[in-house]
Image (cartoon, rainbow, N blue to C red; front, side, top):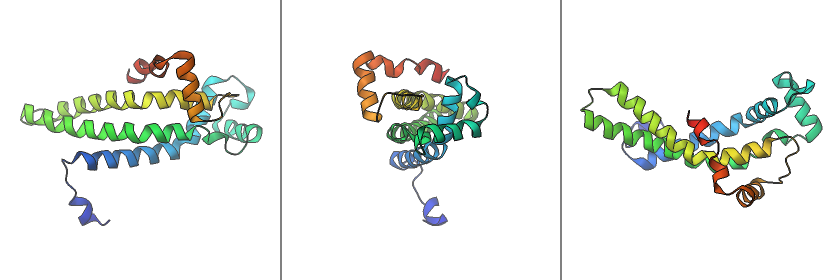
Length: 171
C-alpha cells in the first residue's frame, strides 16, 4: 500500500478503524510480550535472580527453557486483537459523535473523553486475557496452555475471576 492508497481510506469506516486497531494491538503485544513476562516475574518474586531485567530473563530461559518468556502469548493474541479493535472503533465513533454534539468547540475535551470511553471498553474486553496471561507467566504455573488455564479459572472461581482486577486496570 502506498501513501496515496492510505490517504484514500475512509475515515469514518468502523471496519478500517477496527482492523487497524487489531493489527496494531496484536503486533505491539507480541513484540513486548517477553519483556512483560520478565516484568510479571520480577513483580511476583523476591529473589537474587531477579535484580535486573537481563538477569531475570537469563534465569527464566536457563531454568525453564527458551520459550518460557513467551508462554501465554496466545492469550494476548486472542485478547489484544478484539480489545484494540474495540478501542479504535469506540474512540473514533465517540470523537465523531461528541464533535457533532459540541459543534467542535471543545475538541480537546472531546478527544480526552473519547479516549477515556475507549479505554473502558478496551479494558473490559482485554481483562480476561490479562488474567490468563498473568497466571501462565507465574513461576511453576500448573497450566499447560491458554484454554486449560481459562477453563480452570472459570470452573474454580467463576466468571467474576476474569474481572476481579478490572477496577485497578481502569483506575
